[in-house]
Image (cartoon, rainbow over all chains, first blue to last red; front, side, top):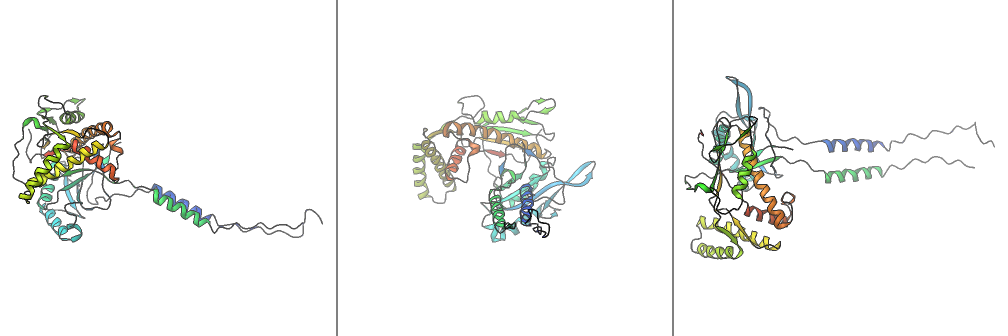
Length: 156
Length: 244
């Protein structure tokens, strides 16, 4: 018997695909770690958020109404026009806000937490005038929704 | 000599390992919560408060975003307003220096005995007038103060602290044309000043960092509310008006 046999050829073993799930999972992890969930953003207005140092975390799972105040893109005498977005439409009249909140308040899901953990989240462009913010807040007072939070970026 | 075939590696447990990792990352991943600044709108009321001048720290902003503290415009450095002066004024306002000009007078030393006495009186009054809203508010205030005293004693301190007079407040007045960013910067500076004071106090009395306290933990929550009793956030917005 010779040491190096020439007659019988050995079959190559099949390439193992066992590592495939690992590669797939590795990709999954990569995307999981790098994904940042986007906050609810306005689709009708341009908003540059303010960055400040002293901020607090907004609680998870809150009931909230969102108000966006930002540039509509139109110009009036060279000055940008600011609009208020509520849900997914621009309001024409500030009294719509009160009506909107009154409807929310009738919903038992909201009315239960109205005085404890119902938040009015404001996302306002940094150059917007306080006049607009005040007008919106007057409507909130009329609807007895007193908790306001201003969404900001954290300054490093 | 018989040749051994190369055995295939059993991949059955691979998925288990991958799932284990998946679950580990699922649990340990934290998402960034949205960052916000809080405010509570005042209830609609026509009541006018008569506030003594020295009990109010007045901050005004005009339509050109110039800011004045107690009637004096803040200084500009290279054409940019130096906002940090607001922070210093807030700290001065809250610091318990007795008798300084134009700063609040601190006549209230809160002690445990005093809290208990007050609460006893109030519960007596409330039994006579159960619907008196003012007494209910007072009861809330004093019971929170009592909790703060107890918390201080627990940490090995004297169960007492000085508080601002009840009507002492920081008042912000804004013109309708003031920019939103100005308002936010002012609020930011006020909170920075307040949190620095809270930080110092927490370090001194509880030997902990205020910012490291977690309000989800019951013991930490008590410390937080005790410190908030000592340095409460008191901000009042003046009614819409034009500021010259």
